[in-house]
Amino acid sequence: MSEISAPRIHTVTTPDSLAISVREWGNPSGRPVLFIHGYAQAGLCWSRQVGDPALRHLRLVTYDLRGHGASDKPAEPHFYQEGWRWGEEVHAILTQLGLERPVLAGWSYGGRIIGDYLVQHGGAALSGVMFVDAITENARHFYGSCNRLMKLMTDPDPATCIEATRAFIRACFLHAPDTDLYETLLAAAMMCPPAVRAAMGRPAEYAAALAALDLPARVVHGAEDHVIAPAMAVHIAQTVQGAQLEMFEDAGHAPFLESPARFNAVLAELAAS
Image (cartoon, rainbow, N blue to C red):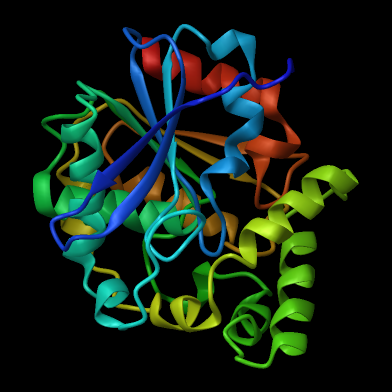
């Protein structure tokens, strides 16, 4: 992995008037890939993708979800509890940046946001989708052992919130991340206020939209994921017609960080299909 070059920086305005921070790398004329990060994270979690020379032929776009990173963080819960807002946020990025036939790659909660987009717009404007340790259902058996931590991460008491967030970041990995990566992910997580985290719980009604999807799809999941159970990946792969399941045996909740070379090869193959 080489040093990450300076990004091209954009601000996208959503239909509900939020400013969303967007960054891109790679070939401006290449196949676009829009990376959608997870709960209490930021676009910079994709550093091992945007910094990989093997992906520089692609147009690599990251953004900070509403309530996260450098994007607007309204306090009112309705900005997070209505699925159409998340879907239209993605649509605004695609249209305002002119991302034609992109691949959507959604990690964890980002799987829900792919679902939000599909409910609103279907898959006609996409070339492919990639679900990365994603969640698309609320059933308890699809979650791992970290639900208590995620609840504590919403606590307004700073000591409780920080302790839970530190433990949650560690739980995302099978093998402990290096100090720089851990500290970066922790700092990014703490940019998402506890009240925003609490407001992100909402219904998940994506089954019909996923079943109707007729695009190349990959479902990537760490076999040792303790946040989202691997059974969730199996369910998504069975729901999305023709989806290919890629189980990463030596990874936890973040295979794109623990096994970036293999992950990036799967992504490049999907983008070329």
